Image 1 (tube, rainbow, N blue to C red):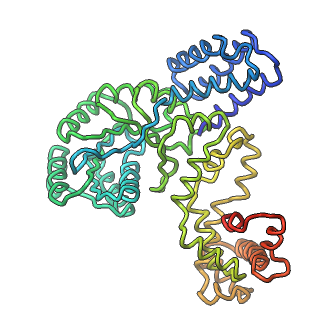
Image 2: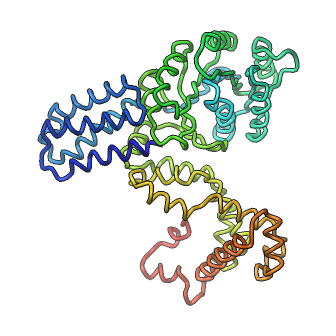
Image 3: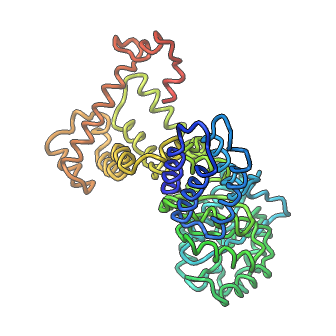
Length: 460
């Protein structure tokens, strides 16, 4: 997300670098570039106008003119304005859950925005991070498959799902679900609603009636980040129809522009609480205006990156693999564990964009980095390892000729991939032997001589 905007703004500031002083003419030229960058990023025109006007007032109002480091000062002004537009006051707790249980959370938005998956993501988040007992239900009777989908996702999130046994209408489902949640002492009831392909009177009337019936403590508007200019009008319609408490932005991994984030936050005046990248249930992060503003300006978002890695990495399994590496006992099971941890990251490019400077890289350079971390190929390699017998995983030297053919056929891959897998594995195995205590080429010893801390090495 934001790659297009990041590259445009980075180029704008680069054009000003080296100037000892900035004049009004310089700043006006930069503001024009910023305005064009925002429009190209699909930010709503009314938001673009307000944003550039505010930057202009601060920049020309002697904050930048005459500054010792004018480019850095202008960058700070733009950064501060981005934070203000995205929601200057970060939400301390996106879902406080202070009301008497069961706390009712209503999920609203257009069809295709990702409401159903988002409902499941929130349930998983609350269950794992707040240790809450969650009940999910759906009133999307327009699409019966949506109810089945949410039930399947509830099972994956390991939370309970309420399916009404009688006539499927929201008038029947909601009171029954609330009664069930009270009787079984659930902490939270999350209600997924029906959507439409566009805003219409029928959708707005239904969502208002549902809100009146369930009296939710929280109403989350789920918005597709790829909506572009339409995001403004859709957000305004839902904000006028419902007392929404916050927005959740989805599909950030598929959007390089990011205009919806800037438009929705400004127009609704309500905070963006979470952002979602990808379909996996763990791919939901708290929204931080300051960190997103830094990411837009190519400064990265290391805090979010660390949180993402911590949430996705299996610490016990990683520790076990690390011990095997130290003992020089790196086998195919260890290699399989490493590949599975990498595959769990899923959106490598999205993670890279959170590193300082990467967002502003050219597409060609990022493409080269992605080729080094080919998730699709890693998945094929995992399939090949899983097609091996336990004996083959323990004694890789057995894997030759006919065994390679059998492994390739069993995993739906080919001999070339199995050969590539074994080559990568043997490279890792050779490296592990260098880590073994007592080895003449022990990398640990060499690093210690250079005063490199052993704990730092083992963490990498």
